[in-house]
Image (cartoon, rainbow, N blue to C red; front, top):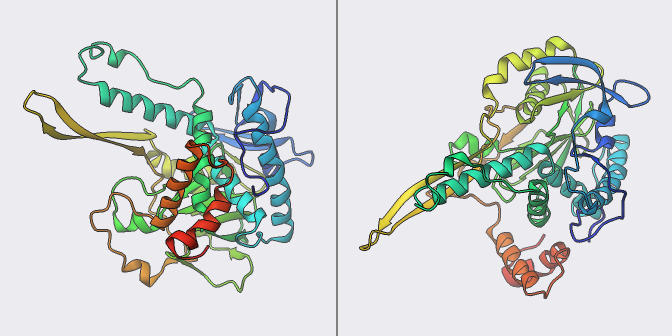
Length: 394
């Protein structure tokens, strides 16, 4: 298993911490304003409060967020330790590990898991669960009278969200990474939900529904890892980035930096974080411009009526999904390739980067359910089976 990949089937034994951070402290320290890396600046969106000096240890946590037994906390600690080492090298050398290497895979997995380990992701799952249950049982006479007076929720939604991320993260193996280096006057900011999934390609084509599934064609993953550096994982078959001769791509246009910082504001649950060099006027300017663009609901559930049987039984299709961040993102250094522009949406409900990979995944998890495969071995299985059974290479 690649170093740092999340393991929900075991991890380090750690003390059962009451205060469990869903954005790691080692990550937030990169945005600290003091030499001891214990203080950062923040903007609380619900209260419109700007705080120049806030204690880092009191940010992005909940008591026993991942449970009281310490199992998930231990698994996350293993992942964080590996990611901290890799990110330290990325920031120091201004270079990402080679695509396909263990460190590259671990870094990509860390980003995907980070998106699903936050309070926002937990609330997103519970909201989807509640809406789905009510859509399915809306006309059931046994519960119809009380349905709107109760709320469906999971006792540990963070665990389910993490399991989803851990099992699906490997399908992102094909995404390439470009290091973006801020050379402008304003640093990058981050948030309590710092990994942003976006899709300029399908947004621009007007495709319906969510565009940010992990296997989706045109997926982009934006992850600022310091005030100077942002990782961009992207579908290289769709996007063409400004040529940088294999080196980090320097971002100096104020509009590009503002666009990337707006993503953090729009993707956040309630707080954005930043270090020195970001003024109150700048943050409040983003807040004024984009507050109305923030997602009021995290998910959507739609029921489509179907047939009615002779005995009166009705059938319908219930479709659920998440609400993506949408802001008509424009970046001067990124464009859609000509061959991608020729892609026809047709009547597909989902647009996959590579359907073969999803078939390999289904085959693998069938083996896991039959206890004929280790759930941690998907990368090796994909590497071996994709060329043998479906053609093509990694």
